[in-house]
Image (tube, rainbow, N blue to C red; front, side):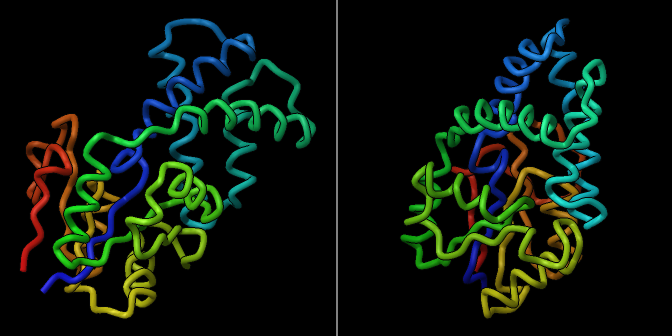
Length: 225
């Protein structure tokens, strides 16, 4: 029987993609990077995603992957000094944090789960300080029993140790935990491989062929007994 529902944070509860796009477009203009907005946003994603994955595999530190992202994105600038790179990333980060917004179905879903007697938590890839700040700023803390970030685990999702570490911290068994997230690989495949139940949140309907349990919005979530 499921007793705990773990949810991903970014692009599951929080519209991170929109916050990222708005931030990077404004930041790129300040850096002198012009062009098609879609291409600029895609360029940042192409730079950021593989470097962030390397951080999750512990190949880079959190700070190292941030610096590498700036250097790969703003190749026209002299970025030999780490202090300069850190200052530029801070400019992006301020804009990004200003854009944090919850999806409309986030709070009602958490309230519904807790009303049903289920424990609720977040299992997120990221630095615990930043991810906890998101939870607190957006008012989610009272609706969550636990916030677990990959920086406090041996590896990030989809590594099995991310999920087993979270289950151990919860003091339950893998088969009693349901994982809900927007990433087919990180949240669903990873959780399933570790023995958890998993549901894919596919807001944009891009995984229609995936052989997994799938919902289009959090309001559709049902928890098996």
